Image (cartoon, rainbow over all chains, first blue to last red; front, side, top):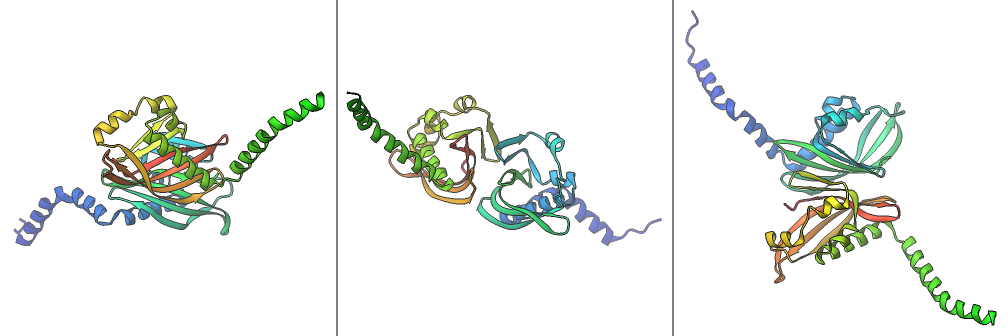
Length: 154
Length: 155
């Protein structure tokens, strides 16, 4: 027969009391991080997932409906399904990308505008091209994600 | 007789051709940044004049507006026209007119300019109603510059 342990009983009480508040605490942590830090973290995750060719992780950094303005086109993706159907993480000769520059242009408690410049590389670290781009990153349901982007890349 | 007609034609058409050429050259020399700021001037003038058609003429479609965490995509002028009413907007907010308080070109290319702005809304008595930051994506399509998308901190 197991012996009654007051310490274990106390830990259990604390855990079950705090458990319902964990999602709120997570959200608080997201707020506490600061909008600008959170937005830059999203961009870190975004490019890491892109370079890893991890479609699920990549899409997880976006909010939907997602807007992409590039070339002379405006594309609106209502949901993940529509986005995934057209997602190509490997394009002719491209190996990986890096942020060359990131600048917070405007920020509020639930939205951050970031002007960025990214560079695409071929295998062997040979730069293919550098492009300016702009990201609208928003906090929705406790999660920061990219809602829209406007790029100078072809 | 024929020479006199030619001279008369030259007197009348000459200045017109010169003026057209100068105007065309001036527009041709306009940089993307200047074209984008001129578009924003026209955008604001049309908004303050409550002139929907002139306002629509400063936009490109599909036109994207991001505000309050929501994305509105207007596929064409008709959908935009049916969604906005100046009188209702003025009544709900107490707005009388707006002006650009700050405009900064953030990124620019031959056919697209990103402009960070601050705009101020005023009441009829000239007092400040509110001031908001916003971001404009201004693009050139078919020789015409227009606002393609905007992301505002206004509600």
